[in-house]
Length: 145
Image (cartoon, rainbow, N blue to C red; front, side, top):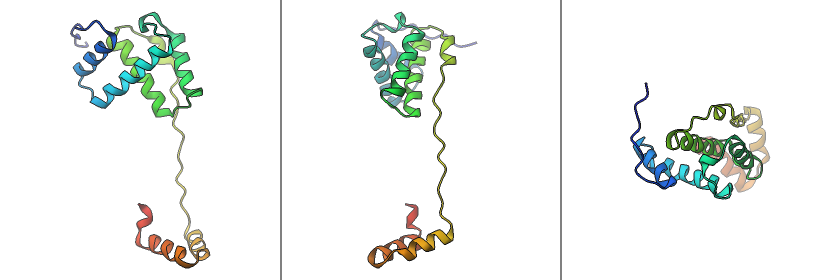
């Protein structure tokens, strides 16, 4: 059983978001980011109240972030989390359809590591001061920085 949330004191939506975030002991940076995305969502929807919006508006907003704004997967997830928090914690609206919204996947980053032969061929191709600096950086391990 989930503990009851205290009633919100403020009448303004963004103040209610702040109030609920602070009640849940979220970090200050999370508060700022969530408020940014909620404010952006409201302005994007021509200042309609989130209570008056539904699945089509939320999906359109998230699609706009992915296509028109071309935000990264982590930024997209942050915006989605802010909207989930708004609807679940502040407006007390359960959104079963929000669970079905697909979250973007992060691209796999495969590290590229040169073989010993490739490194020695690369260092052999460098001459002069550039070659000396490259050999020093590689030999001392500073290449890792």
